[in-house]
Image 1: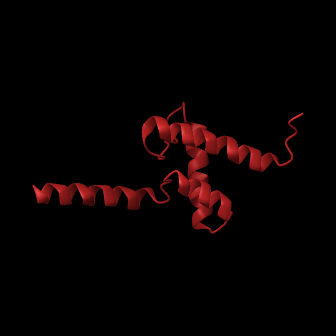
Image 2: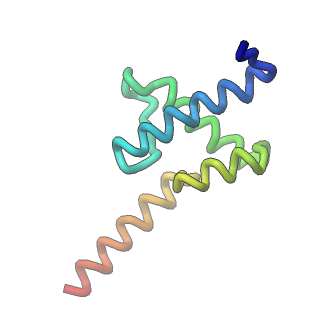
Length: 92
């Protein structure tokens, strides 16, 4: 009958599925919390980053997020992107 035993796990998996779809469509996992269409997912993504930093996330959730190339630190990711752009510019 499809009974859900663990509501938190079910909700996490639902959001993870939404994030996978977002990533497939947009090529990244940096979901805005300010866009009305993706506000809820953006808040969930931000909560995952906070939980990870607090070491309060299960290893299975970390593995799932890592498997899709999840960006744990937006600032660090942005810095690396800009540094790569600078390298490419200097190489030309």
